[in-house]
Length: 264
Image (cartoon, rainbow, N blue to C red):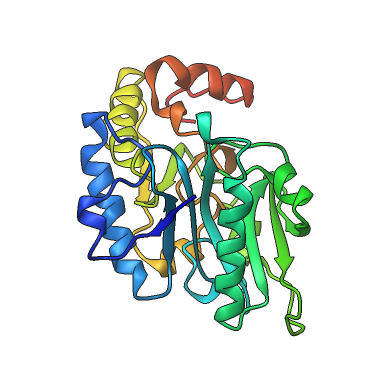
């Protein structure tokens, strides 16, 4: 198996695994590539299988993470996927080994991953990571878990934790729908910029949309899911981007017990 670690020089002519053939996501793909190129200088890396498929891992130093975690002595993982016909071939363990070796080489204690306490969309599979030796070091009331895996021989380091902003969420009394998103995913540009606006307009809703367009904003976000998070009032609802779609919106909010009426 051959893995490629993309650089600012190779990104323009390389696929990034997701949204490869749907033109609706062309702008989002370019936005994600720009984000990867910009964060490369801070040590963020995107590695993928040298095939046309979704087999990838992203990781970077905790001090530079675009997530509300406090982990300066750790390497923080971003997206990590092995899908379709590439499953059950050892790619996941190989990619994880690449990231763990990068942590060792950078003098960091190991890897940290944000997952759901139950399986959540757009986050790594926490159950699989636990089978690889990760253990929970922190959790939020909104259903997120922080897992860590130290590498053999690592010096003792303070345990990583969620930032206070992720624990607090939005202030009590917040009104309406609020969305937080970033360019960490090629799907967000279309889903927020087009689908969600149309879905909400159809229902007479005016969501507050906050783009996490800096590391500082992401590290102080009210949700650990900085690709996309939807709040209703001060309550976290979902990190599932498909809620932006007209045919998914009502069902997902209903399952969360939310009535998306104007004036929410």
